[in-house]
Amino acid sequence: MLFGYTRTSTRDKQTDDLQRRALADAGVAETAIYADQVSGSKQTSSRPGWAELQARLRSGDELVIWRLDRLGRSMIDVITTVDDLLERGVAVRSLSDGIAPSTREGRLMLNLMATFAEYERELIQERVQAGVDSARARGVRFGRPPADPVKVQRNLRTVDHLVETEGLSVVEAAKTVGWSKSTYYRNRGKDVS
Image (cartoon, rainbow, N blue to C red; front, side, top):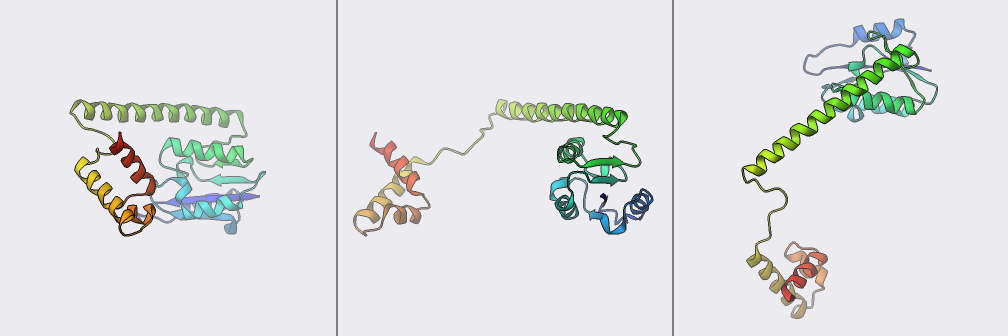
């Protein structure tokens, strides 16, 4: 069965008339066209129209889109989405781009796009790592800050007191200071050694 998908941006208050006409001309029934009016920066999987379409698509179906960029703003998101569809046995056809994975040329274009997406992923990883290295060089510490030993000792005394004199369980007493049972025992073990 033929399905269609359109996406327009909320920022521009665009309509999807152009996309719908192109899909109808390609043989997609109006009732089989799913649409989203959301920012392209939102991942494809988080769009309501796309989620509804995903639930309907079966192996042997064909998804027709006006242009590949309607599936997502980043190349990584587009390639991931197309790969997922192809793995499920759903054919994909992009009208404006002329990309159909069922053809040699279409597979070539998708493979080229996948290569660029991998390159984009590596660039992002390099930029993130450079930022982390730069922050570390400036003395920025990552992770949870170390616990205040004075507060830990106070909490241990409070939990011990509640257990011994008030008759509370360790779980109940630990909750009063915002700890779990395991946090209490972990800190108690540090205290004993």
